[in-house]
Image (tube, rainbow, N blue to C red):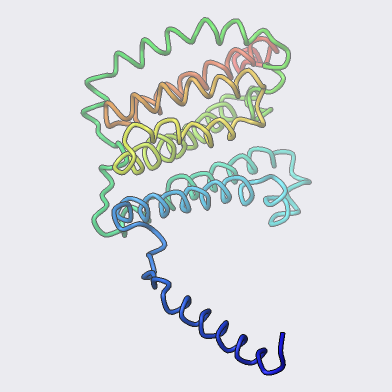
Length: 270
């Protein structure tokens, strides 16, 4: 290369690069979410984020360690276990019922009827839930003879001490099931169903099964089938009340069978 060519070469190269840059098409900024799916994306996001917050409240605020951290003196109370169970149910209601209710009530254009609260649907299909209970009762009876089962239930260990203990616990348990069904089969199945249709049922089953991780493993896996069936029924009947009834009936049956196997039924203490 001869002297004097360098600057001209660099200049021509620079001109060429500049021309290439000028020739590149300038793409317009695109929205984060495509315009055609935005009407569905943002509502689904709000419901999912609310669901995550609700699960966190039930799991962490409703935990036994949190209860004893707030009321450390209760550990010396022989009846503190029922108090903890009341704490657990209360925060389950806050997370699974109160929070989603607030979201649906104050969200413009959203109505509570999206949450499958129809009494008519329950009345017209009540026989289906009776049949479901009749189908699962033999399974409950057989499983109830397992030591793993009757050592876990009732979840309030002193439920068989008296009628007061038993009825207090079952009343709290029923309140928890109302919140549970509203959250999974109402808020998730009904709320998401407006945007993703029947796919909301399997979506709701995943966190529902995970909620059973602390229970015996057969019950945790049975929650998959139960979640699919109850979710589909809530979707078809637009009602969560059948699920509430069957949940309560199954829970009471399980507790009474467990107490019977342990000889702790209240009427045996006379």
